[in-house]
Image (cartoon, rainbow, N blue to C red; front, top):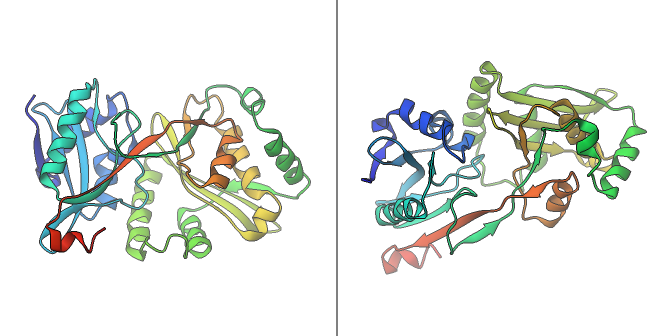
Length: 298
């Protein structure tokens, strides 16, 4: 197997996406259109026939290219129809040889011994709603009973409204996400809407929006990209009601609801309460910069 690192403009995007689609671990984040829209730059490691691929987002500073975590991109790593441990090792080795510094998230199928283990909960939507909700926690059922007493309306919404609400509610929490990041994500959402792969739902009461979720879809998963509940909504369990209705709506589709997290204990308990199963992945950080730069990048 001969691996090479190519800039995105030299990559055969059709072969790249075919490899991803047929891989044992396909994730929407590694598709060429997702990377083209959301990253500042990206390169890709490929073998001779695109049987193995590995996307690497990068920036440049002080003359050095470095890997970085891209907003709205959770897991990348090595993808392929069949993956040997040596394939993963060789791809990571090439990345580390090509980049002196970086943060990088591998996908859950890329088992390595070092790195930070990060939680990611998911729920199968293969069964009917009654069977799925049977495994809800008692605390969740109590919150849903509380929500049922409210005059809630569950309905579709627009991507721009979901993004605006998310920005307003979580501006401080996600201060690293820039207006340019949100603009790029919105452009991606418009494309996904044309593909019928955009899901935006809201919960409101008397025309007052209490919670919204923006999710993206592929043929395997629904990705919980941008959930948002206002302070008023939290007080009446609107977020619980919203996610429960999304599960009800997409039950028996055979899709997996990917909650996208979390290592934050309260959010982890929330996703776990829906019967979510943890499918952890690894984040790595590396720093092989010259000593005088390394001091500034610890």
